[in-house]
Length: 253
Image (tube, rainbow, N blue to C red; front, side, top):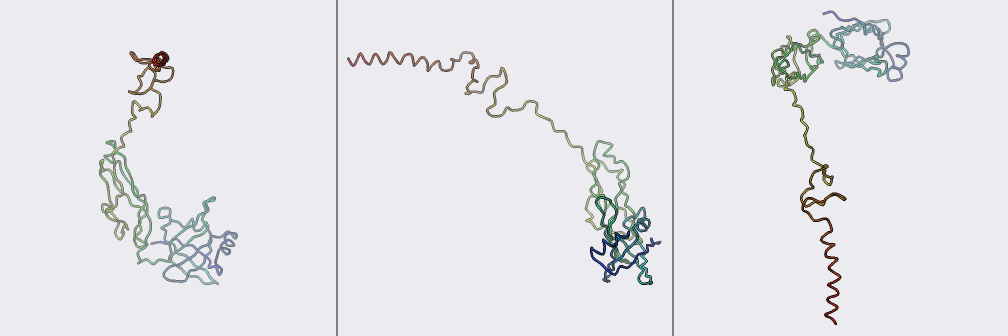
């Protein structure tokens, strides 16, 4: 397997101040660690790093770092563990490298690509992808660039799981075998709105509608057919009250 060779300089100073000075000089600060070795501060040309990245493997590229220190040179096999990106320029501002050997298992993330048109989608279902990348374990030389999953045979209600994946030799997925990768689900039923909304409590009835049983008609509204006008009974009683008082007076006399 060919490695991307990248020359790097060993920095004698570390810390945020030293990293700012490195960036001011047009270099990219980095750190190399792993295999229980002491961390080494590095400086490299960011253009060389971007050119060395495999277009398919990307961050899973295996590098041959050429460490240059006081006229001495040392080759170290390494991979990128982490990259800090400037939020505005979107350029790398710091890189963490980790030492690797060709016979050890490395944990990396690789993309998942769904291939084909599912039968269930043709029948009106929706394709749902649960994982767009997978965490795997493999030797550096056996890390795949991607995992393709054929979903053509999936019908509505069916799915593919980790146990269904066809993996290259030496590759192990670090997920539960029952974990779903993709599935076809039935389309959601549209919510049917009610044709007649129930009026809010205390709201006036619609024009021409009879008031609820026991409810008083709205002010100024005509009484229902056959109903006595509001206050009529009370008014009649008031007229008869005065003569009753006079009758009592005559008995007293």
